Image (cartoon, rainbow, N blue to C red; front, side, top):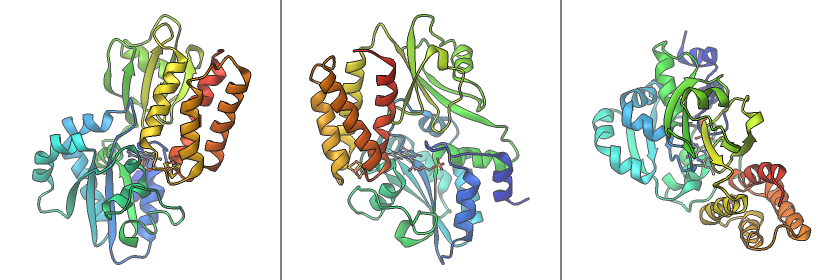
Length: 326
Ligand SMILES: Cc1cc2nc3c(=O)[nH]c(=O)nc-3n(C[C@H](O)[C@H](O)[C@H](O)COP(=O)(O)O)c2cc1C
Ligand code: SF4
């Protein structure tokens, strides 16, 4: 069985956020026409609360590099990049240089912030352009880096590719747990475990009233205690908030400051919308008019932003606003 068939059989989905079936991307790059192909390992890991790629770099760099080598063997005349956020690059450069020598693998230090983790912005940044997203389609699998078919997978995804190539993948995944918990950190468990099971097993299930944000700080969904039976896909982060310690309005201010600093300003709905949300959060949200305006802007961001960054602003806001009363 070739590696793409093995990936398909494993059911592996991407660990960068969207949980896209990995074999479909590999198949698309394999079948795309191109004299040259690129493989990019995305180690940008810019979402608040996600830290599993750093954990893999720290503990299993050989496995990660092996996953990239498997990709290089799969796509003829291909070249690879390991794209790392600044601190990961500085910390792990030396050992990665050692592990990748004699292979067509280049290490790159991320030049920008959170948006550079978005695949088309990442490509623009490698090409030395402004850190702004491209319109899709075409998707990178067809026309990516320098217009060539490009495979972009998350760093953890490559770790599991390595395991699949050695028949050692059994459906596990890494989870980052942080916030108001006893034991923060990265843990490996089966991907079909519920949030409750994971928190219980790690000694992190709070007894008092609380809510939990899953799926990365920026795209996070807020779940109450009763909703913890569901699973977590994508980047697998769990942030626990003790209700006593966290003021929902302050939490929203924290999120919007993040988007305010990280959006690229290319499109009006996101650039202006994020600015206006920041403004409204300084006003009284018990006033129905302010609350309705806030909801309206969030809706507009979701419906008309150019890229997934602006669209994702709505996810944590909508789910939090659904669950609290001002
Ligand atoms: C704003 C934004 C930031 C992102 N940041 C990351 C990141 O830090 N790491 C990552 O692997 N994917 C990130 N992604 C997702 C990538 O665009 C891409 O889907 C992913 O690297 C594909 O890998 P996967 O199929 O293995 O999940 C981000 C997406 C958006 C919209
Ligand atoms: S949605 Fe935000 S980050 Fe994306 S292109 Fe528009 S301004 Fe830039």
